[in-house]
Image (cartoon, rainbow, N blue to C red; front, side, top):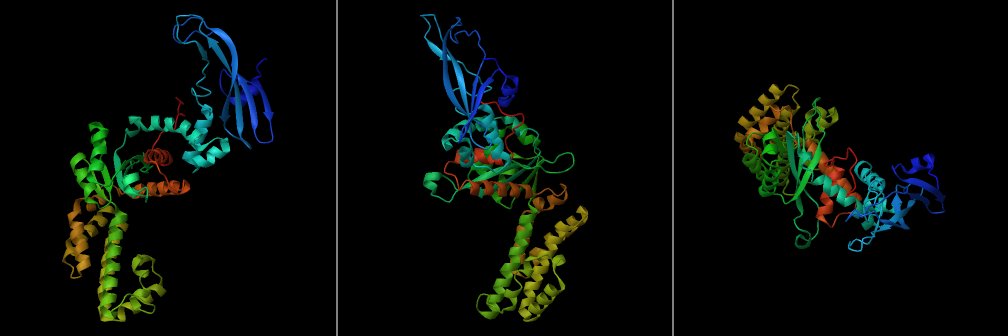
Amino acid sequence: MEPCPRCDALLGVEGVHVERVERGPTRLTVTVSTPSQVMGCPACGVVAEARGRRVRVLHDVPGEQPVVVRWRQRTWRCPDPGCGVGAFVEQHRALVRPRGSLTRRAVIWAIGQLRHDHATIAGLARRLAVAWKTLWRAVRPVLEDLAGDESRFASVTSLGVDEHVWHHGDRRTKGPKELTGMVDLTRDGGGRVHARLLDLVPGRSKKAYVDWLTERGEGFRAGIGVAALDPFGGYKSAIDEQLEDATAVLDAFHVVKLGTAVVDEVRRRVQQTTTGHRGRKGDPLLGIQTILRAGAENLTDKQWARLTRAIEANEAHEEVFVAWQCAQDLRAAYRAADLAEGRKRAEKVLNSFHTCPIPEVARLGRTLRRWSGAFLAYFTTGRQNNGPTEAINGLIELHRRLARGYRNRDNYRLRMLLAAGGLDLKPPPDVP
């Protein structure tokens, strides 16, 4: 049968031509073949004898309905009686990997759907009309090859770290619940961060972070100029030990969150002291608990009036107002348009909070003084922070919910590296 250039464009694989296309009630069937050729034995090189063809069924990128490719695969036999190969079949890696049941472009399509369209393996398997395991067996080797490519760690100059819980099952069967995630926070020429997940390792500890940094090598560690983190001492110790030339930066969001938590602690303590019970409907302090979590610049006149009435309702409530003002001072340091002005405000916080007569504020002041270097580094590194790392965590949570959870940590790591941009998909990967 003569090849049809117009039909061959349907499949788009060089050296493979379409013989016919049949549309059925539930699927589209495309029959393809390769041109005749002289084939040598893969072991001894002797010219092999043609043994006809056999039909191999492959699943291709679906359209309105699943697409099945019937490949009329050529077979040969080695005529050399001393060769142990015997019969063998042709292989066409541009079409499908050996022993694979999905075409190369179907695998690439599936990976693209997982990366960019928040798809799931189960959903894609339904569209391809294959089993979940069939699709994952085709996708996983490609993701493993991409994850094992150390070049994806090149040019990382800013690094973020955070932890998250990947399962809520039994630790004895599924291992540690916590994973430590490393995120590339390097800025482009325009100063924008295009965060991407670099890796996920078991545990939430100094050792987990140190081991990962050690595996990356001296070249990688020497290139890190900024290391952002949440206020967790284990990660800070790992940075001090492994990234001696990097500047540790305490995440702004978590610092402000600490200040807001202090206000809430003071409110609850004063509430209990003055009323002898937790907040109840009609209690002045309970009525302003959400206002106390807001920024002063965002309050309306009505909210200011409610805040004033609640504070004036009892002389002891003045302590709550002072704690709220301290939290606003901390927040104002980060909101300052000028970094030099912001640093001055931050230094004032460091010099005053620890002497505050309110015990919760004093405790916060002592905490900030222990982290003073990382706290002030925000103002000398162009507002570097761990915010993009939190965004990556949000993306991870989305994909975990889409999949209804994971049972296998290795599969989880590969899927999250793909979803969060940790694997380079350009140019399209070759299927092994």
